[in-house]
Image 1 (cartoon, rainbow, N blue to C red):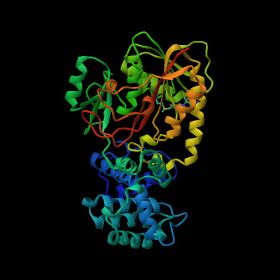
Image 2: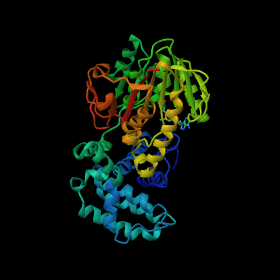
Image 3: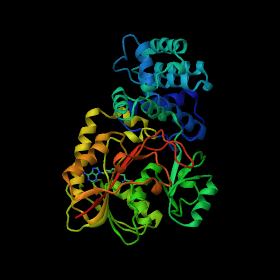
Image 4: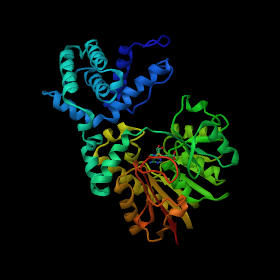
Length: 434
Ligand SMILES: C[S@@+](CC[C@H](N)C(=O)[O-])C[C@H]1O[C@@H](n2cnc3c(N)ncnc32)[C@H](O)[C@@H]1O
């Protein structure tokens, strides 16, 4: 696409289909940047077409399953992605014009070397969608994979599972964590962000890139979903305490810990991701010792007052921000990641001083990576006990405090004061008694 002139409707659909195709083959969705589509309105439109296609992925799959009698043609280039973009526009972005939705999707398919021979099929399928489907008839359960919905239904109940699935359709705001200080709230007021809880603020709308918001260059805040701030808030670290932050990159929790004045050692397996932690800390003018190491095999030479383990997980709690994540997962991933977390926990346990605190958290909605994981850990580690989380520590917010004294946020929750929606997170706070 031209980098300077305004793009045509065709260019935008083709770029959107190409980007969606990458995601369909397993890549994460990376929104278009200014260097790729220069005009901000064109760029916003292309990003919207892809994100709506991804948020409605399961519903669009159901629809295509019923209009393509012989199934999705194989080795058909951009066919599937362009068709999905067409359905997304037709049903979910009707203000952009139904005729254009069909015409442009068919044009993209016609001009694609491999997809071209299926242009008539695409035209017929889209006309059937136009005639036969309306948004109200679609099943919210289809917003997430069937196996995911079945698990949520079992664990959270049918009504909550539907609300959780529907959270994927909510707009995703920008959450910012501020460093302490009075002048902070002035900065957030200036950009129109509201206070959520602790040091977390929310900006619902913005028309400039993150880097151009007030206070970014001075390192006054960083981007972090409000749910991700809660585990460290609950660790209540004080100045001078020694803290080991395991699985630290890109460093949201490292920033919180260092901003509290703790002596932080941040560990991650991925050197490139640790580079990001370094850059973030430099901008924030905060310090931490960075260590590239495997959390299943950490040396226990030293013990810490507080150990935070934000373990790799299925990340099903982040599907509002990254709707493709949940479609890229397989049910067996949950067992595998739970196994890895259990090894990391075993290793982390040795690194907590007697009397010290261990915080374990994941951005997963699956009990194996939360409640069940903790149940098994406590059974095999009698030297640890739960230090129950209290609503008072969350400004009176009782909803995420669950049986066992753990924290569980789900994406459909509303925050106590301002703001609806947050990532799904699990956190447990344990104390080493001996
Ligand atoms: C959920 S992210 C951590 C987010 C981070 N704590 C934050 O607040 O910004 C999980 C991290 O675990 C790291 N990781 C995965 N396997 C690991 C291992 N075996 N040892 C150490 N780190 C690992 C990944 O590189 C990734 O950065």
